[in-house]
Image 1 (cartoon, one colour):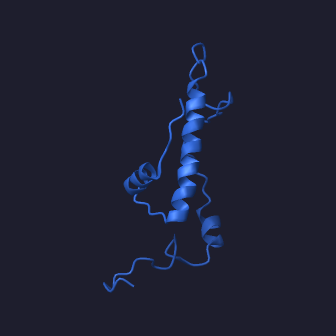
Image 2 (image 1 turned 90 degrees about the vertical axis):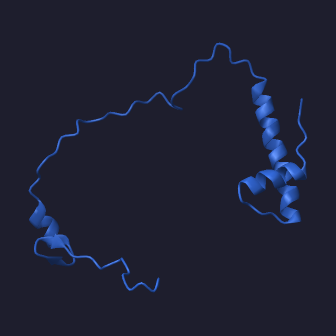
Image 3 (image 1 turned 180 degrees about the vertical axis):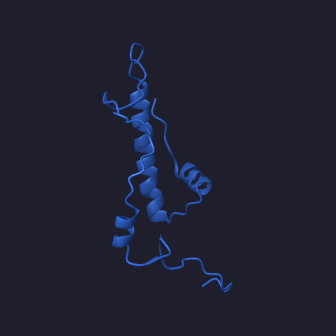
Length: 103
């Protein structure tokens, strides 16, 4: 049984989502939402009695390595590649505005 979606229902859903549509958009989205609901109703008719629930879209399994901290002793090489350093740290421009004027 296909349910008919009307513009009032679309307006209600749009207001819940804090969206606003003009009249042209409202007609377009009403048609699209009705098509989406029809697709779900079609899927709902499929017999899934013997279908096992899926936990992933593929059968591939991630190959995870152990999470072991390694001291690679590359600090000097890293600092040599940084554009600006100071006292063993990478120096970056300030990004927090503390002037209080909000600009």
